[in-house]
Image (cartoon, rainbow, N blue to C red):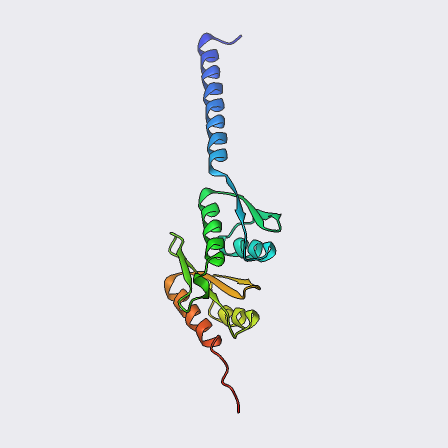
Length: 169
């Protein structure tokens, strides 16, 4: 038979375990955010690959032809939304391109391609050891995510490759 002290300790330990398990489950549910991200200009397949690569999440899927569904931490959901906003906006088409500072020391930059092919740009950026690279086929865009100095080197290389070829008479 158990003494009163033993029963009290057993009940106390069980209660503490149940409380900690319930608290952990609540934190997990709170940490996992979900959102549907609407697409207007880009194909869902391109957006899926781009978000997986640049946001570093595998917890995203195509909801329909014009939307992605992401179920991840609030930070990754926000990053996915910002990446899509970069591409969907008009900033990528300007000579300066568009940027989003992630908050972890990296920045995502987007630039339209006018003359260079996506494959040519990807190959050149890989030689610079850029952390993350994404391409959109239509409209032709390249996105890169890295630290400031590497990002600037990548954007300079993209500008160099995307210059118009000289016309021959």
